[in-house]
Image (cartoon, rainbow, N blue to C red; front, top):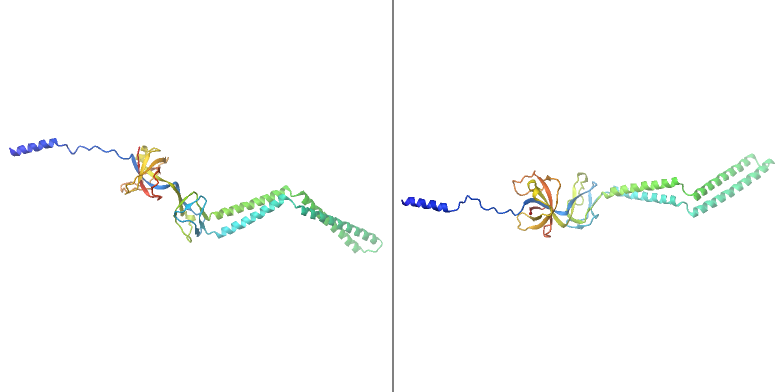
Length: 330
């Protein structure tokens, strides 16, 4: 009887105890969705490559330097191109000067000198004609030989030719250059300038200039190394870190939950710190994942939609490419 009473009491006590198989109340998730991303500069970091193969001659910046748009960062040795550029520039200058002379026409001094030359040639012609007349008169009386008369006649013809040449020269100076001559000179100057511009552009390919105002994030090559232009090898990375963003890769399942302007929090794995931000842009097409999480079960071949999150907290580490986790809220 005592054993039966104890068993009955235990069963009654068990009926009064709440069952542990009942599910506990679930806590709401802190975020609508989470995604893996990487820190980047507001203007995407630029990996700069050389346009000309050659040995690197000078690296003018170091990592962390602040640079301006158009500033020369690196130079590849291109001595032959520099020589061609200098020669082409000199030729273009000469062609421009010649075209300017053709446009301006002759100087006043040249016209004066040509007029004086014509006057002298006319005087010489009159003298030669008078000498020939005297010799002809004497030849009729037998005082001048036929040979002498022919010589005086040749002198008269030479003087006449000289006078005609001087007159043509003066006429050319007085009338100025013809339209065809001016057009030819202008065309020659334009062609020479084009060759100079092409040579200068070829020389500019031996320099790497910063495309933006920003900061040098990485220098990948040093003096004496090959530029690797034909292989597209990056030499310098620049970016603008005044404002940092996170490029988050949102999985297909979570894409419908995101919107422009949604608040977000960013944190680095292992750190309790949260950095506030907001979604400012979302890609219009899906793409392959590039930032992998530490979860070994996370698939790398899933399609993702890139979301740009602007970070309002200035204390976010300025480490481009650092992997972070992003939590999106309503």
